[in-house]
Image (tube, rainbow, N blue to C red; front, side, top):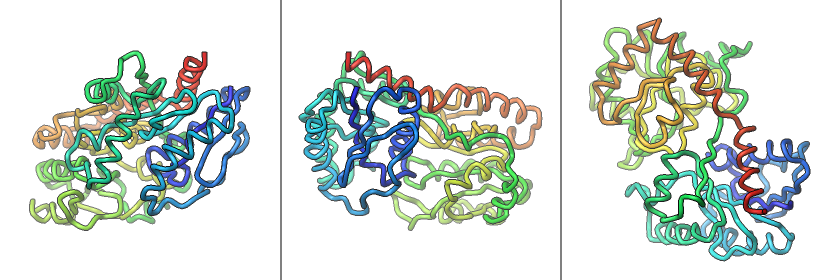
Length: 375
């Protein structure tokens, strides 16, 4: 079977779609080397075996404009036909309106359709309508969670039998086993011996206001000794991307209880997770929730919201409450941070929950979908 894979996100390996694409390319040839995998990018095509991957940045996407639409709707389907592909896979929400071969699409979430703040300008809305229409042309749709599947059924009107849940996974580096350079990495970022961790984006669905409201209630006298670490590149304050420092000032939070180490390098994230007492993650919407799974894989419990896919990912490896219930979130945070017995129980459950997910399992289930479409 010759499989053509849309490689647009190869150039963005730190995005969710980029990580997903790279992990599929790393694992599919290993579990099924009898098939041929051809990754199509705007610049060239790559034939993938179990022993090689394309170099990391084959083309530039800083200002893609309409180039992305042209690639998805013209270049990629034409390449599939020219290459004699038996089927194609678009590993994100951007499948062709007129596919040349049977095509699978992975829709990670419906954020631009469901959340008004993400609908963008007229061009973004037009693009959303295009890919929304194209979704019905896919032979099979994969998605990351039961919550996302329900969103797809409700808002795209696809039949249930043509939507398949295939969970994602955390990378193998995310484990509870300490590494020799863990302490040096945490020192590099100015992190103390114990801390509560937030590591994700700052856009409005991430609910930084709810996070800091909960912290304002939970910090108490322990806050200076177990501070809240908010990692990432801080945004310029806006309604869409609020600056947590401004929110903290408005809530009169003791600045000594907050640390802002800036962006964390991908290779350093496991060490930063392993030093955390727990992950605080009050997001309102996640198609999957890779950040909580990375924390669980490191044996770190999660205190967060029970919204969208997060209950599926976190399971009983944490405490989840309504994203607007700052009081209950603060109580859960205090209990996990101060009750050694509860923390130990949750840490064990975190590892057991994380073990349910693996990229090998993702690859096997994706391959089964390919074979179903091809048969």
